[in-house]
Length: 364
Image 1 (cartoon, rainbow, N blue to C red):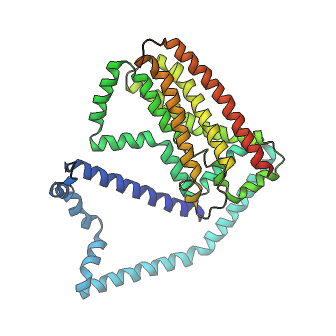
Image 2: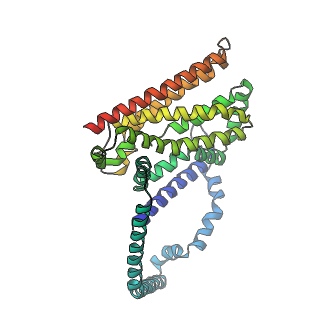
Image 3: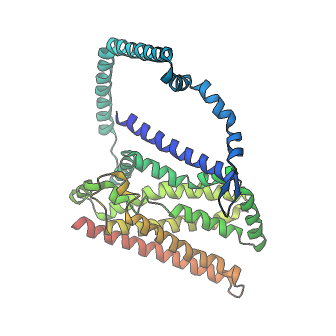
C-alpha cells in the first residue's frame, strides 16, 4: 500500500544519509594531510576489518552467491533454495488470500463507520482543519517528510557528526574563548535562531499544495484564516523545537535560566517574522506546476530566497544583541529597547505583507 511505499522510501533515504555520514566520518578520522587531502587507507581498512570479516557470517547467502559462479553444486543449492522459498510463498498466499481479503474489507467498513460517528460527534474549527491539512500534505510524500524531519533535527544531526568526527573538541575551545568575552548567551541564541529559520516549511507551503491550491480560491474562507493556519503549523513545529533546543543549550552550557526570559519571546517573535516573510514569498510566486516532489521544495527558488531572508533577519537581530559588547559606548538598554521596537514592528508589518500577498493570490 501507500504507507508501505512511503516507509520503503524513507528507509532508503535514511540509510543513504547514514552511509554518507559514516563515510565522511571515516574519511575525516583517517585524514593525514588536510591541504592535499591525503588519507591513510590502510588504517581505515584495519578499522573496519572486523566488520568486513563478519559480513559473510551474518549474510551467508552473499557468500553463496559469490562462490557459485564457478561451482555447479553451489548453483544447484541456490536454485533449490529459491524454488523452496517460492513454493512456500505460493502455498501461504493461496491458503490465506480469501481470509485476508475478507478481513481487510470488514476492517475498512468498521473504520468507515467509526469515521462517520467521529465526524458527527466532533466539529472541528476551520483553523484546526487547515492546520491538519498541512500535516496531511507533508505526510502525502516521503520527500516532504524527510525534508521536514531533517530540518527540525539539524542541531542533533550536527551534534552527532561533530562528536563522531572529533570536531567537538575544537568547538569547546571556541566556546571557551566566547565565554571569556561575555557574550556566549547571545551567540548560542543566534546560532539556534539561524538554524531554525533556515527552513522550507513556509517558503514552500503553497507550492506543496500543487494544483490543489485552486481549491483554496473556491472555499468561502477569508485569506486571513489560511495565513493563520499556515503560521500555526510553522510555529507548532519550528517554534516548539527551537524553544526545546534553546532550553537544552542553556543548561548544557551552564548558563543562567534567567536568559530564557528574553530568549524564548525573542526567538518566538523572530521565527514569526520569518514565517510571515516566507509565506509572502510563496504566495507571490508559488510553484504549482511541479511534476516531482523535489521541485516543490528542494528545487523551489522560494526556498533559496527564504534562506536569504532568514539570514538577513538573523543578522539584524545580531547587530542589536552584540552591539553593546563590541561598542561599550552604546548603552545596552538602548540597544535592547530598539530591538524590541523593531521586532514588534517586524511582526506587524510582515504579517500584513503575508496577508496582502494571500489576498492577491486567492483572488486571481
